[in-house]
Image (cartoon, rainbow, N blue to C red):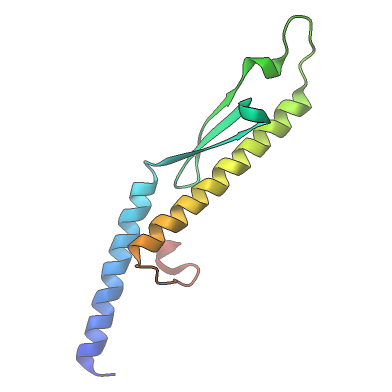
Length: 112
C-alpha cells in the first residue's frame, strides 16, 4: 500500500468517525415507544437507549373496589421498557448504517 493510499484510508476513517459521532448525538433527540397490555403501559426511550418516560393507564391500577395488581403492573412495565429499548437499538443501528454507507464496523469501533 502506497503512502497516498494510506493517507486516503486514514482520511476516510476520520470522516466516518466524525459522521458516527454526529449520528450518535442526533440519536439522543429521537425517540421510540414500546407498549404492552394493548397500550395499558407505554415506555418512551431515546436513540441512546435511555428511558424517557413510562405511562400507566389508570385502568391498570384498578377501579372502584378492585385491588391493585402490582405484579401485573411490574410485568407490563418490564415488557414495555424492553420493547422500547429494542426499538431504540434498531434505530441506532439503522442510523449508524446510513452514516457508514452500510459498511459493517467491528464491535467497539468508534465507541459503538
